[in-house]
Structure formats: structure tokens, C-alpha cells
Image (cartoon, rainbow, N blue to C red; front, side, top):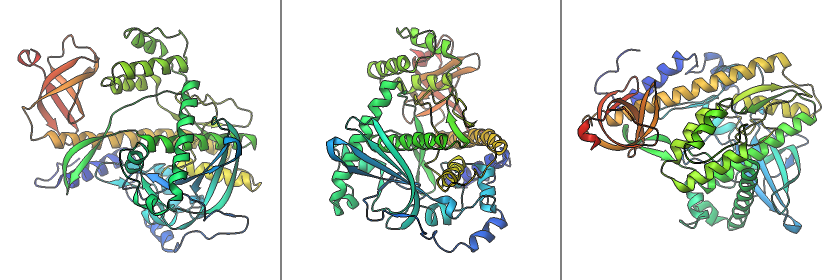
Length: 495
């Protein structure tokens, strides 16, 4: 990588680093001429056809990040007698415009995901599609696949149906504003205030989502909280790093997406279709998790037990909330990463240990993830009584490819975020910080300073330190291009 020119902006510096990281890992940062040729022929959103349900008048809303424009899903609630509730999730019908083996699709297959770096987004699909023609934008009529879920008064799933429909987003809402309102810490978002019927509908959605979260916890779904910091810019300069935090609105969407993804996997299995499952295997390093819990006074069973681990996590979150993100990160690393695997009719997929689900796939973000677009095509074929559009051999290869590409994308995003952190601290050499030890092994000792939430390597004064120890450190070196941040802890600082 060529040295970055002096006097460039932080944003430009990070964009250069991001583009280099993309090409270094074999992802395509730009679309080919063939893609733009195809785009020239796509002038409008997909048209409604025969057999679609017209659900445009229902009170559909999207809830996403403040600046998100690639809107994949909408939700709405319907109250039924005896406390039952229908939760409907509409997923953008991306396949209606992006057909299998188009040049646009081949780019999506190559990258498999949108890559979100702090200075530049590399969308899986061209933005004219993902943020407009295939996005479920506010006040726009769009085609969707609807997962229609019916829940009992205690949020037990009674039945579900999947069908194509035409929908309309009546309110583009943001996580933070919705959460503040739901928690009584802020006013209703402007669009909600303009449509009073949305008040009752969103509160009903929130009620069901909270019930679903409790049911998952009782099954052994894991409550993990890791710190994901993002760069905050003033103009084109990095001004700070802010930690993304879960809230009532993110939980609402998470619960509905989990329910829709599980129903989709169950539906395709019932149709005897091969599928791409999203799995998290039972931890092979369970003994190390047992050892970790034992060091904190909790005895876990000798064999993997999600419910026992969840109870331990809840206890630690209450006992030491400031250290819980670091404990969560340690558990995440020991459990391992999620992956895509092929499931064939009559197969026995490993399930998702973290969600305590046997049947799970990715289907609710087809603008952003290729496995979701692939699953959408399987769904549409199954709904129309057509054969699967992918062979078992193709699906097996795609499962491996999507897993590898997801890992590449995560590393690219982390690399750029580390460079953003190094940029923020680059003029603060010699400054002292309070921190906490997040890693201690033969590979090195790592410290996360508390404000801003940045992790770096402790290159001096690490002897005898253990994970969770509080330390006072001094910044001694940064390398923006590599994303390296080094701290030291001398005798004077240790006192």
C-alpha cells in the first residue's frame, strides 16, 4: 500500500485504507461496466402483478439506523381476539429486479455482502437499486415477500404464512428516536405523531418483541453485549468514537427478524427444498468457557448448555455491568463464529447455539446480503411450485463462499475502524488513560481505554496482568495505515 499523502482529510485517508483492504482480500470495491449497462435498462421499481395481496394501506413502518437508506424490511402488528397478535414482516422483493446470473447478481455473488466501513460503504448492489428501486422507502409502493406470524397471548407461535404482496412504508423511523419514545425518554417521532394510529401499533409491536425476547432467554438464547465503536466525523475529520448500543427499538427489529428467519427455514424444509442455513455450532471450546465461569464463582455443566450459560451471563451483567462487554467478547471468541451450511431435505443441521434455534436462515436483508437474496429465490420457487433455482452442489459451494466473504468483510470493517481510532489518537502521544485489560496471553496483552472506547496493545508493563484488571496506561505509538495503537504501563503509572 502506498503511503498516504500528507494534508489529506481523515475521511479520504480512511477511504484509501478501505479500498486497499477490499482489493487485498479479493472483494470488488467497484461495479463493472456490465453492471452499469444493466442499470441503464432498469428505470423503475418492479411492477405489481397477478396474485399479489394489496397491503399498501396497512400501517407498515421501517426502523433502522438514522442514515440507512437500504431498507430491507417493514413490520406491522394486528391485534386479534383473546390476546392473540399477528406480526407481519415484509421483506423487499429484490429478486424482482435482480435476477439470477445478471451482471449485478454476479457482483453480489462475488462480494456476498455490503461492507460498511466508517468512511465509505461498499454496497452489495448499486445504490440506485439498494437505496431506491429495491428499497422499502417511505411513501413508496413496493413488492415484498411477507412473513405473516400469528402469536398467542404469551407470544407462542401458533401459525405462519408466507406470500407475495404489495406494501407501502408509512413511516421511516430511526432506532434511537423510537427507543427514546418507547422508554419514555423522548417524544414520539414526527411521523408517528402525524399518524396517531401508529402509536398503538408500535406499542403492540414492542410488547410482542419483549415477550419474544423473554421466551428466547428461557430457551437458552444468549444475552451478549460487546462494544462496537464507530467513527464520528465533524466534516471530514474524525472527531470521536461512539459505541453502538442495543435499545428497545433494535431489540424489536431483532426479535421480528429472528422469528421471520426461523419461519422461512421451517417453510423451506416443509417444501423439501435444500437451503442455506445460518448456524452457530455447539462450542468445541466449552471446557474453556467452564473454566472462565469457574474463575468467577459459577460452575457450568461439563457439556454445552445454553440455558446454564445464559443464566451465568445474566448474573455477571448484573454483578459487574462495566466489565460485562469484555466478558461477552471472551465468550463470543470461545463459542466461535457463525457460518452458512447447506441443508438438504431430511438433513439434520446443527442449529444456532447462540439463538437456541434448530431452524434458522438469513432471509430478511436481501439488499445487503447475498444469502438472503438466494433464500428469497428459493422461497419464490417454492411458493410457485417451481424447482429450486440452485443445485445442491451450487448451494454447498455458495455456503462456503459466503462464510469466507463474511469473514473478509468483518476484517475489513475492523481494520478501517482501527485506523480511525489510530487517527483519533495520533496527536495524543504521551496522554494517559484509564483502561481495562481485555486480553492476556502469550500473543500479547490488550487494553481497552474507557474514553474513547479504543483497544490497543500493551507493549510495556504487562507482567502479571489478567483479563478484567483496571490499569492506567500511556499512549506511546500509533500507526494509522496498520491500525496499530500501543500503550505502556510503567512503574510510575502503576501506582
